Structure formats: C-alpha cells, structure tokens
Amino acid sequence: MTTWFTADTHFGHARCIAMNNRPFRDVVDMRESLIANWNAAVRPDDEVFHLGDFAYRAEPGEAGRVFERLNGHKHLIAGNHDTLAVATGMGWETVSEIHQLAVEGVRLVLCHYPMLEWPGFYRGAVHLFGHCHGNRSGVGRSTDVGVDAWGYRPVRLSEILERIGDARNE
Image 1 (cartoon, rainbow, N blue to C red):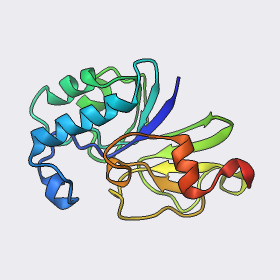
Image 2: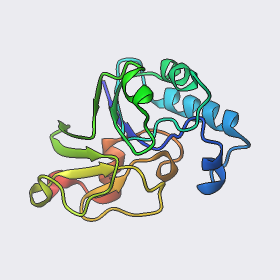
Image 3: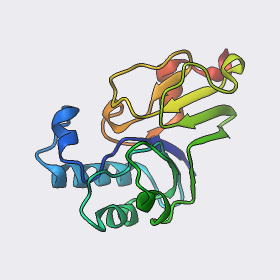
C-alpha cells in the first residue's frame, strides 16, 4: 500500500483552466485527464489524502460520479471550495480540516491552507498544503501538493521529501 497526496483538482470548475494556466481544452478534458493521471498512479488499496478543493461548480451529481471513478481509500482535508455535499455525501474515509499522521516514519501535518509554522515544526514535521495552485513555495519543510505543482497527479512522500529535503535526516 502506498500513501498519496493531492489537492485542488477543482473537478467541474471550467474557469480554473484559464485562471491557473492548466493545459486542458475544456472542463471535460481536465476531468478525464485528472482521473486518468490519478488512476495511473493510485491502486485500489492505496491511501489518498486530498487536501481540499476536490470539486467546484460541478454539475449536479458530477462530483460523486468522479469520486466513484477514482482509485484508493480517499480522505478529505476540506478546502474553501468543498461544499457540505462534497464533504459528507460521497464516501470519504475521513473528513477533517487539519490532520496529523506519520507515513514512513515522517510526521505530517495536512491542511488545505499553508501555514508559517505547524505542530512539530521544530522537530522535523512536514507540512503539506494545497490552495496555492503551485504559486507559492512552502516555508521550512512544507510544500504545495496540489495538482498544479505536481504534473496534474497525486504525489508520494518520497517525491515530496526529495523536493524539500528528507526530514528524516535533519
């Protein structure tokens, strides 16, 4: 089992393409590309933490249909565009606003929003966030795990640690 992280898929949000310079023809192309990229990486028994803004302005029922097509045991760290229907009506394993866990011996603090400091900041904890669409780098051992920052796909912890420096060795 692998643990994956992602954010800011914005399924159904046509304006997100132009606003974030995404390389998709339209909202359908974006949806299908993001689903294909997700499922090419994530296996059915993997864990996926989605750090917010799963869907926005999606047609009625679209978010649920997309959710069902995505591999993995999915957890939501709610973002500013996650409606009550997205947060409670789709079958997430867990839903929270901030979540802490350890993966591969690394303490992680997950939140949709970037923080200047987080629990365990001075003890090697890594903070993962979304919201910024690849427009802001993190401070210390933190990074944006949104699709705009990682080739429109979920990312593994090993890739994150390579980018920010392996917190286990500091």
